[in-house]
Image 1 (tube, rainbow, N blue to C red):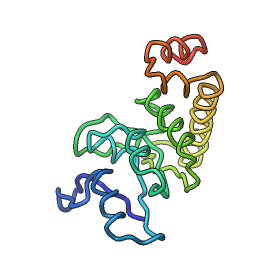
Image 2 (tube, rainbow, N blue to C red):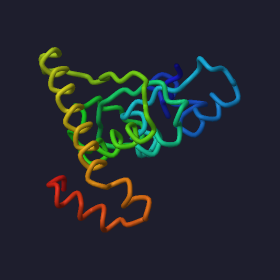
Image 3 (tube, one colour):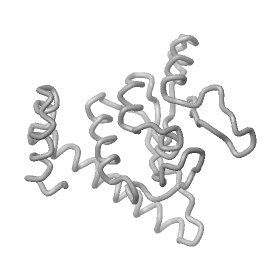
Image 4 (cartoon, one colour):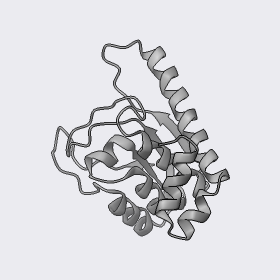
Length: 164
C-alpha cells in the first residue's frame, strides 16, 4: 500500500504527492496487490478534498488514515477526525460508501497533551458519527439529488435532517 504525501519534513519534495499521481503509479505498476492509502491530513496538505481523492482512486484505494488539519499547504497537524472539517469528513464517508470501499481505516493523529487511549476512542466515535450521517443522507435520497445535479436540493435535504 502506497501512502502519498505532498511534502516531507526531511526532503520537502515528493515525486508522488497527490491522489492523481498515486493513481497513475498504481496503474503503471499494474499489480493487483498495490493500492493507495490516503491520509486526510496529506490530502489537505496537497490542497485536495479527501472525498474527491477517494472517488478518484476508486478500486485502487486500499486504506484511509482518518484525521484532520488546518489545510495549510505543507503542514501536517494530525488533529482529531472532523474537528476542523466536519462536512468534509461526512462527504469522505459518503464517497467511501458510494464506491463500496472495503479497505482498512485507521486513525493517524498526534495526541500530544491528550490521553492517547481516550483520544483514539473519541476518534472512533466521531468516525461512526460521520459514517452514520452519510448513510442517513444516502437513505434520504442524496444520491438521486446529486445525480440530478440538484445542489440546492442536496443542501435542503441536509438542512431538513439537521446536518447543516
